[in-house]
Image (cartoon, rainbow over all chains, first blue to last red; front, side, top):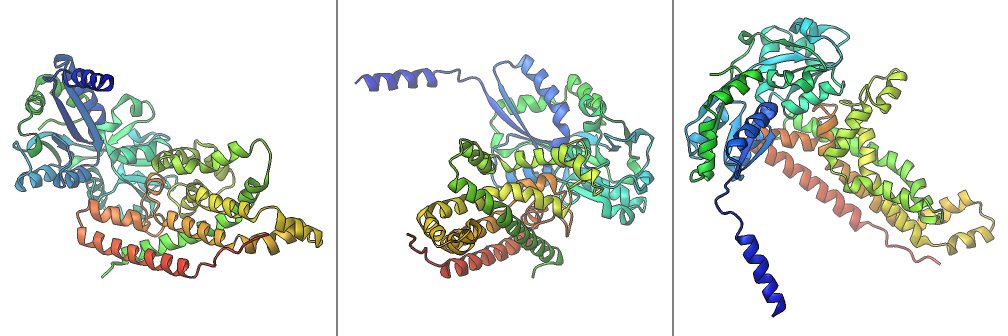
Length: 250
Length: 225
């Protein structure tokens, strides 16, 4: 009897927790790390009882997971092709909205990258160059395109090491294991990386544009918080944060 | 059916697992022997440190190896002073990392096997004037042979399946660090499901046949004492 009473009491307490607090899980491309953290913090200031969880990773991986029913409510992809594909497959509850155009940069923690160009990669002192895996990471694909369009790919291919996503790539450079890397501008301008080394903006005519877009997933079509967050992304404060982190606005 | 890249990845994986197993047989046996027979107070802590790679998430292990083996880390500083550059992104860097990663899989079965030998056979050998080294090779090792087999199989298999560590310090370089597990992962990430299925099936069948053969011919543990 006593046990039953305790059980009832505990259930009543836990089930009586605020029901109106909503939760949204966002899958965001790794290059959004610093920008999205700031956006979510600002959003939570005006939506204090709501839970917003962000998971960072490679756009390609999230795409596959969402196809297999992963519990993400919003999907921010570094390559707009992925959410477009999901929308075609009927897995989106909103239109595909472009949120930024990404740029790639040369970055180094041990050398002054701001004085380099792509040709500098041929230098003997540069033993390893880190790029994201072109097979599935959008920034890696653009890095490969830029290297091919300047006829450098064949000459530097032997020096390349591939990161799983753009954050992993930045890690290789930050720890000094790769002397230089081609990473996202949005990662390079963050104070944590910017304090360690400068960057050189790769001219965007050397590669296809890195159009980035997001969707509300089918799973979250009745999630009001997801809709609110999606609308918030169009606000002036978000646009300011995105520009601050090196994303060109569409 | 399998692409050149797939075959290269398989061959690389087998080479890595083979070399790591051999190295660990050399390093792990004395450690296991000591752990099995010592009464020193630091047996516990040493055993715990050996078992650490079992509970550490592989990506954590990989990350700290990346830092340690990089130019700013202790191991990296050492390898650079030897003039061989840094270990991450190289085959031998993977070998070093895998030795850490698979250490408990070699030491623990060996330790158990050595403990099962017990003191008696070695005491008897001593009364027959065998030196400790002689007794080890002619008495302890044959009695512990099933343990050696288990330890080698486990170590080999564990290294074949290694993924998190490779992802952190490998850099995915074909022929150097693009092992089969990473190759399968790449196929999946690149939405090449057919290739992923094929390579996975090959690895699965191969592993199963190897294990089947080894376990079918496993010598039964001899009764000691």
